[in-house]
Length: 351
Image (tube, rainbow, N blue to C red; front, side):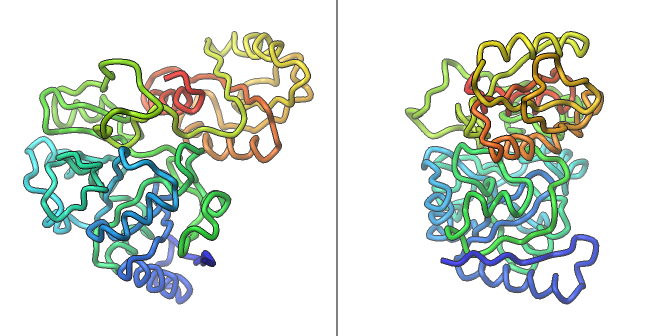
């Protein structure tokens, strides 16, 4: 299979090249094909969510296990018909406040949703992406689009079309190239059907924002240790043990900004003789003793949304440098910092 790279311009959806790309991608989705599409979080691997055979192709292309459910993307609330049975009032409030945007809501599924989408679970994750190209593609296709991240299962998520091709070239029909993703980490996943509501995966929409809009909410805590091969389907996308991982070994270092240089230097001593990579915030100096490390300028430590936006790009860039070990400071668990910490701990296999 030859994977098409179709250019789409978010700032001008009426440009002839963009219209042609959107029409080609929409036709592929309607015919059961796989199209990687840009969203404001990461690039997703899309298929018609109501076509069981097309959804099965997502799992085959990504080498994704059947116990891991996927998220369905819609262009308007009318698309909820045929996907969900009912919508709690808390969910309605969150839709009004946060859609389009990086918030996935777990809602009671309808009988028309293939079991593969939800891993057989009674709730389906649904969100309305804020990216103009994603919304226009879904509108033109006329079908809800199931779309987990467009990478091989467990690998670092893609935030550019090239990242998609690095993992999936020849395995999917097309990728819509609309430039880098805005947020850089996946959507927040929330179950609004419980009281208190449950965040299964932190993201750009924070716990504090959800609480202000819709009431009590808490973070999901697994009842026991996570397993590489779960005994049953996962309750939500993004809660598996090992996700977002680079090829290199990822070593996390935690501490106040003033202490990080010394702590990174100390951590590096354990890997003498190995090629080191360093995710280094732009407002922190290069630590002593790491002059030979490959460095990715990660954004400012004082601006966690910058860190989120370039996290996966940094991990992929250091993998491309053939680093054996990547050292990475762990941001504070405040705001989107909580989402970054979850991704890094799963990537390092420490959560």
